Image (cartoon, rainbow, N blue to C red; front, side, top):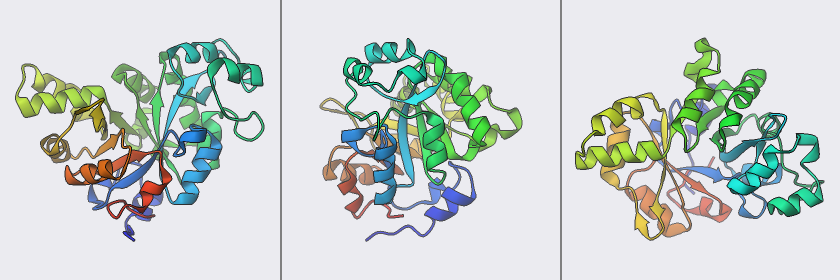
Amino acid sequence: MAVSSAIQKFTTEIPFHRGIMNEQLLIPVGHRGGDGDIENTIGALAAAHAAGFLFAEVDITSTKDLVPVLFHGNSDTRKVIRKLNYDELNKRKVYKRIGFSGSSKKNPIPRLVDALDTFPDLRFFLDLKDDLVSEPVAEVIKDLKAYGQVSIDGDSWKRTRNTYNALPKHLRSDVALTIGPLGLAALFGETKKLPGYKVLKKRYLKSATNCSLPLRMGPLKTIDGSMVEIAHDLEIPVFVHRVRDKADVDRAARIGAKGVMIDRLDLMDHPAVAKF
């Protein structure tokens, strides 16, 4: 069993993003909480936590009354949630409309505050799914003083920065920022020396504290060792997602990634994955 001796040091004593570059094994991150059957629920997070995960990725959208909740769905189902107040959300008829398979009693759609408060020793990648969620997420982070517990993530760098800028200026350095698609574009541009790559690098990579990149898009492999090396030279640890099986974990280790976002708990048994 590959056990990490450094993990407690950088997950409980110092903020989210400090010390990750020193980790020699792949850091496992529970994708959408870590259990695909009950994704983005307290139950999923509890299963991942019990399996030894100390990092989790969750998707965040907001209700009509601007309560940040854990939910992925798609653009249409998130629109349904945005038209409901939180106290209207966890009902069977709503679940049917949005295709949510949880139970309103055992695994309801949770608020972000519930997830952070229930698992104070988990570190969360917060994948922001809509523009309205930025300020409410910042309020939750401030209320719980969870600055070192989170990394702000999402497809929109503007959304990520809006959340970051809504936090107290003197505490922002404890909050991690995840760069996604724009980071992929910047790294690809630099490896190929494409026009404009220096602008992308300066604008996006210089402000990020970690990178979340897809291991593949459909049948196409999207990142390689040279891209990971560039990110790590900038002290930006690369976490990869769309990791489906042990072969993907092998590839993540081979290209030098620092972490893998997985929703199969059995992949924790892979020898390249750190055990906490």
